[in-house]
Image (cartoon, rainbow, N blue to C red; front, side, top):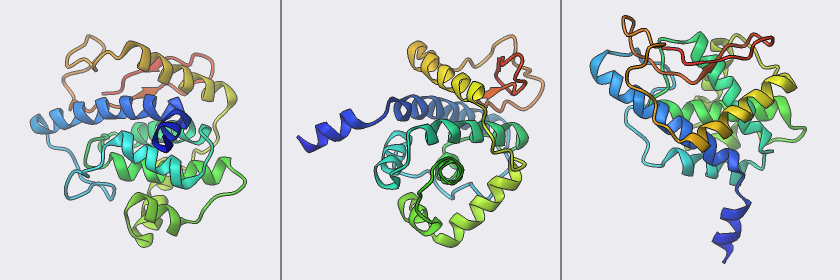
Length: 201
């Protein structure tokens, strides 16, 4: 009965975000077989055994952060992916990117939050690694942490549409430039006047 209560209390953003990131990671895993990808500090030696969905649920359960932090973490992930296009999100780095982006979003959004040592324990990494990941993520995203209400709503709407459509990421699509390395990100054009969704490849 307690498990049922826990499941119903889980915000929908967890499901939406995990579903989207799972598909992005799987798509980039496939392209990695065709095109070599660079390795970053976020890259693990092996794929974590915990699913993205369970990992996000674990973070939500123990971090005691607001659900809006997960939307802001998604914005940060997207900004990082756009600026660091040579390091696409895949199953080897998505978990470390998630715990880091959530940590940073909590520090930026919430008034009360746990320290890095606590988030490291929740994420299954050492405190030293958590500290390094945070610094690398901040520099990698250019310290672009502000999220306007309009941008927040845009990302929320995108996550909802993704969950409703549940369409797989296309392997080949006219907007994709196949001449370049196939690296799929879930990116938006951050021009506040247009808010056009784009799939950066």
